[in-house]
Image (cartoon, rainbow, N blue to C red; front, side, top):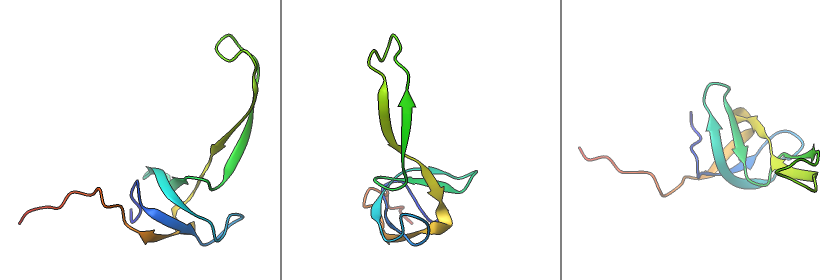
Length: 82
């Protein structure tokens, strides 16, 4: 896949077109990526023993890899020796 975790990408299609963010995770089997600040989803949580108040939790959803364009590669990649 052309996108790696840590790359800076720009959304080129969909409801978040034009937004930029950093790739948080990549799902190679489904060809989807999770980008920070893009495709935010609100999930309603019931009160439980672990979360006493409940409420609304926002998180990023995945988008298809064909809808993003790499702007800058991450610098954390290792260089190979020949």
